Structures are given as structure tokens and as C-alpha cells.
Image (tube, rainbow, N blue to C red; front, side, top):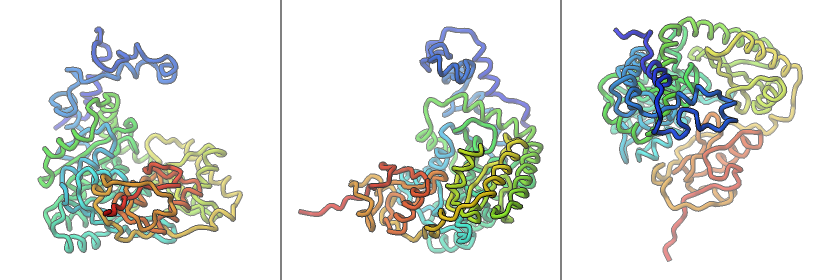
Length: 480
């Protein structure tokens, strides 16, 4: 039985900080002595003393045999995995590695069309062919949810040679699909279920939260420990269980997509966050749920506002629909942030979404409620006049994402790109769900959607021209 009171990596880092020696290794600032003073004034000096490289006592991330290995074993036990890898390039590298570990060039993988852009990167790197499933869609709230077990089963019947199924659990809005049923169906074909559980790292630590992906039968899951728990930004974990995942391929894939100079500050934060949840997780999540329920109840009583309520919802994720006040989500987010001192996670057409976590306080909740109270005291009647339904995802893939990404491209004015094949990942961010991706046919509906998101204050990422005046498309080669 592992002792969750231990923090082997954190302890080793502390010992190295206090070890007096002359450093002749990277990083160049030499334990903070070379740091530019304005940065030291901002962050203090101790953090730079902890910014160390792969010293003997600190182990090696790619071949752990010491304190990193022990810390990962403790994490596996705490999160319910048979093996865990620490990630310093965020969940992005975990999703990429999951696809690389299960799919090669030309292999099929089933996934929802509202996957994060990291999954598209995984397709480009691996050469895998996506079999996209449209998620359930709420046309009233304009929110895409999860894929259904029925859709997964139909896709597997049509594509029995599929190598893996990937799903998102929970979605950015906190909606959790029937992952247990999806796992059961997937395993009938003896293929692995991969889960983008970036926003569900807290599920394992309280019975009133949704079932963790591993407990529901997932074979591999990737969690952003920094998004909802107490690790540093960019610190994540990849967990596996069972026999359907090739452990060696996961390790090799991570060597391709992780930095060879991992930050020990990030790694130690994972060790600390694991201990915090293993020892205090239930109490911390009970408190977080109480705060979230208070916010949900009080905000839902404000005239003109409603909150997302579903039986399979992560209660720590709060989505407020503001269209009843005449605001777009982008308008409301801007007012809350710039005038009322409340900063959301992200906005969409009608909604503003907030992450309530173990770091929030009752004072935060009070400020949130008061912000919406003040927002509700006014109204706006013009912002929603151009509202359109969310873009419909049809089967628009004409080339594999890898083929299109590496194809000879040309840059065209936006109005000339309709019916051409895209070579870029183009998505509103956050949440980072692509509207267009390499290999897809560009449609007038997609262009109109992107332009309207941009006009209402949304940020478009992934494309070379962030102003969205041009797009890169596959160049048509004409024989002379």
C-alpha cells in the first residue's frame, strides 16, 4: 500500500535547492543568480532556485527510476490507474501521444467532431483517419454536448477495422456523456477507449461528482491537473489501465511530443497536487460543490438569466445564459471583466462559462453573483440581432488531416476560399474546438460562422492570418 503522505519529487527538489554547490549545468541563470532583476522582483528568487535540470537526485522524466517514478506510482494509485505519466506540455501532448500510441498512417479512429485542436494535431502527426461523429446539440442554448453510445455503435458497425475510439468527457461546458456505455461498446470490438478528460481531474475525489473515466472503463485518459486542481499551468497527467494500451508505445510517443528539458517546478507541482487531493480531496470538493451550488441557485433567481442544468453535468462548471437580457455571451463577458471585476473562463454566443474550483472563495462567489445582479439591472437589445444557429458539421473531409497539412498550399482572400480544401486548424479560442481543419472542405456556413464570432468579439486562433481576411488552402496543381 503506497503512502499518500509522501511527496518524493517535491522533497528531492527541496533538497537540491538547499545543496550548496557551484552549478555548471543548465539553465543558464544558475539557480536564479543570473535572472534579470525586474523578473526577480515580480516572482521572487526562490522559484528560480527550484528551476533545475535532470540532476542525478531528480531522476529523468523519460526513463524514471527514482523520485519521478515514485511520484507517478503515487499518482496512479490516487487517480485509479495502473500506470501514470507526468506531462509538462499540457494535456495537448497527452492527447497527441494517445493517438500516436494507438494509430498509424491510414488507421481509423472514431471521435466527436467537437474535439479539441490537440486531437487534430494528433491526427496530423500520426496520419490516422478520423471517423467523425456529430455530438448531441441543444439548438436553444446553442451548445454542443457529447456523442452517444448509439452513434459509437453505428460507427463501429460501419468501420469494424477502427483502431480506437476517442471521446471528450466532460465537455468544456461540463456535460458528461454515457462513458460507461461507450466503453462497453468499444470493448466489444477489443479496441481501446481514449478519453480527453482534461477538465475532469477532480472526479475521482468526491462521490457527488461524475464517475471518473477510468472507473467507467476507459483504457486511457488525459487530465489537466492544472485546470481544476492545484498544479501549475501546463502540468497534466496521462493514465492507463488494462491490457488494450501498449505501454511502450505510450512512452515512446511521449518522447516525441514532450520537452527534453522538462520543468521540475511543473513536475513537483503535480506531486504536490496529487498529495493534496489524496489527503484532502473529499473535503476540498465538498466545499467547492457548496460554492458552486450557491452560485447556481442565486444566479438562476436573477430575472433574464438562466443556468445550464442537466442530470449528467459537472456541478463545478457554471454556464450562465445571458441572451434573456439581450446580451451575447461575448458582451456579457466583457462587461463582467472590465466593469465588474469578474473574469470568466470563456464566452460563447449566448452563454458565459465559469470554472469553480478548490481555489475559489465565498468572496469570489459573492462577487460573481453581484456582478450578474448588476448586469441584470440593465439590458441590451441589439447584440443578438444577427444570431445564427451553431454551424452544422457535415462530412467535409476530402483529404486526411496529415495529407492536407503537408500539401502545397496557397493563401487566398477569405471570400475566394469557399469549396476549397483547408490546410489550417481554424477555431474560436477558447474553447479551441476547430470549425475548420486540414483536409476539410471550406463551406459558406463555416466562413459565416467564423466571421460572426469574430465580429462579436471572439478570438480566432490556429490560422496564419488571425484577422481572418485570408486562409490557406490546398493549391490546385494544373498540368501544363
